[in-house]
Image (cartoon, rainbow, N blue to C red; front, side, top):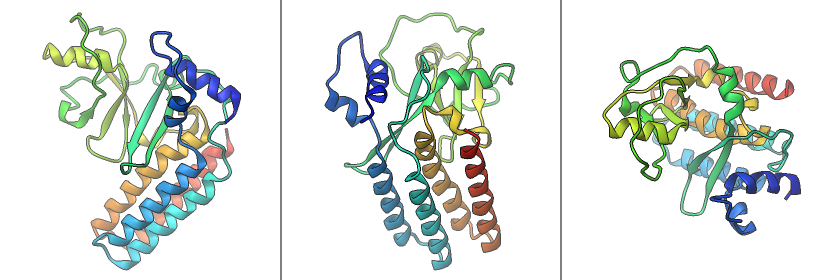
Length: 240
């Protein structure tokens, strides 16, 4: 593992200044080998899906494309030093779990001056948050919106910055200010490196394209969606 990457991650995983073991750090890192494992999981899952064989073939080839693309990027590259990160966790089975680390500093910058939402516009039922230790109740801070990321699963939004504040508002049956990072605007710069971006994208793209296949969209439409998004991903990666 890249020493610089290990040092960076250990600082962010450090809890109450207690040094954690290197084995613990490694458990919360998804490697290139992990990526190949999740691709195989998607392939095996697709073969069992109750959809037409043509759709299965399309999905499998799309996942293989990501497997090939991911080999161009190493998991432990680190060329930035954000002060805040969020681990987007995906559990595939009892042995495979991935961590795509989001750069909260960058997300905060690109969301400046964007729309503010409340529960009047986004239902609590459509927001997933991470449970945090209960703190003393405090007034809702309307000057500092929390950040939601849109992803291709239900609930549609996930809190990536402000889980304590979100939980504080829920406990008081109050709303709070929220900003959204739309799926269409997620780029590699939103993550600590390109590899972590791909970890996030492959899961969401599988869900998105499977939804089209399960709804029996025309094969030309499904293929167009895939090809357009491939070009989108490649263009984003080239500009990093």
